Image (cartoon, rainbow, N blue to C red):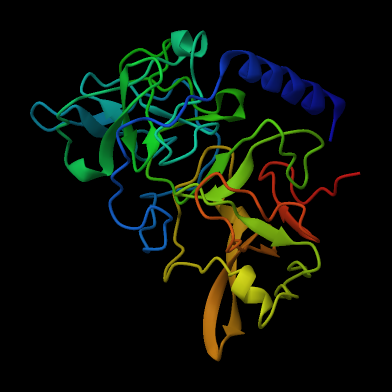
Length: 312
């Protein structure tokens, strides 16, 4: 890791810790549609292209239903993202725990990232109203979530612009992501030399690699060292029937995800890989935000930017 990157991350972490404080669980429960842990296959797909770093000056187009509070907008950088009824982009925060009915953005953080909330939400074409729920924050205000992810605006955005995406490596324009990132001040994922965002599935479930595996190399498929009973505790992240072009945060690239076939309990499955490394979950992780598998033996959560750099 270069010194500039390390120093930049230290500055970002310090700023976030100074402005973001976790709130207690809200009184209104999160009513998720389907399995909140993402077991039901519902994979976001981009219409075209990959997930290259977006251009801040991109001018999106927006599809708005009459009186819609949330609609879809699109641009060359993002293909499709969520915007409010006035065309202002909505955002997700990696420090939030999906479905927990809490926000990690409070105090001065809210001056830059004001919350989004609508009581009786009306959604535009292609969106499902039941995917949007509300919770009461510790400060008494209400906030709207998408599939458990609290939604915000970026104070510096004008209508039909997206300038906050990728801010601090933790703020991303709201989309129905295939994979996402989470962050904890005490967790240093594999590849990083200090606390940094780590890879999760769309529902916030931590994703792991097994450092005893052999990564794909020079066209050779990866080899998993986790077999038989090991897979009871560390189930594979199964690839969708068609991986296609998954919707990813701008900090990730489609080309880093692949799949390989393996036999599990007599059946052939396709397991996802990241930069050639097979991906797994940890059964004892009971809820989004849990990271019980990290640093258990050779198991690691990973920094999607820096992995597979080995920590020293």
